[in-house]
Length: 495
Image 1 (cartoon, helix red, strand yellow):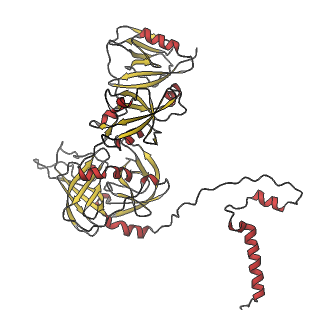
Image 2 (cartoon, rainbow, N blue to C red):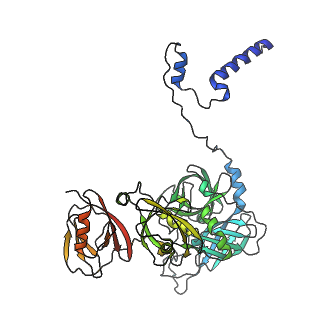
Image 3 (cartoon, rainbow, N blue to C red):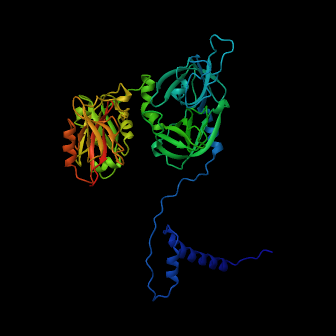
């Protein structure tokens, strides 16, 4: 039975609802729910003093995670390609010829009949960035390949030539012969990518063909020891052998990463190169076929808490300059050993490895602004970069301890609890440590060159320099380890 409601009754009900909305919604201007303490205060008699109310400001609501995955997968499918490479067999019998992150690299079996082994194949993935047939993939997918074939989502196949490669970033650019009018994958902005954001990995795992997996960004700026410019996106979107070189899409269908590495024995952990790194080198890959990078010409090391204390820094941030190449860009700019580089071109250097990446983004001959901390004062310097020839030249410099010169005499630097001896040509060699001594940043074989900025020529000079150090402080030692010069922070025990 349906009962009719009079106009007056309906109007009264609407008025009551409007009053309730005003009471609870604050006329639509109040963004937060009324806390229980406020409700209690409103119910208390007028004579009662209301308790203080603290306002909590909430962050903006995140983008809804209910986007249409099926529609996104269907839209990006034509932009992704499968890659098959051919490699001439080489190396010892029964061993795979390549040792990459991804495969399968085929073959690797003994040839029972002897003689030359048949060519082996490897599988990978790529994505189209130009309608004329330019494709991006990983360098290790096409490394020393004698032939490259690319299959599109519509089953068409093309021969491909390698246009450019960058082994340091593990990126390669291919061009499909005779291809035109291909769908292009838009490049996004990996810098704006947020941890927790949904991503879609597309690839050719185990040669099964076009496969999509959904996950989130688990972390950013991961260093996994894959190369000098480690800066990976970590994701739990399933990545398997054969996904190498495939795109990682955001929910808008933009490429934000290039799937590159998996960790052996780990589940739900994959790594992708940020697309911003690709955009930095793409023009050079297309025009030159290789990448030229700027060189600052110095060796540096991380700033540990102990080093930060010795340098009287507020926090263990930046890159500590251990050695400057004579006549190099850093030397010409006035950068000195012992300086802490804290900023390059307005970008803060929070971790030492960021210095290498920030410098490498600039071409040889370009000028960069470098901010250093020297003696607790900031200095703004400009450096004109040289061309980077040896990638290890700007490495952190963690060489094995050298043998050093034969000790002429062995003594003990009592205050530090280390056994030392003179070195021909100047300096003092570390020969051992007293029991219970905390000198973790020193190693046997290190040659001590300076203590708190004072040059050390022999054991007597070391004793004198240590004698001036305040007990309970941290001494800053400049040491040579093999062929590398770096700094070490050593506590000066209180007696």
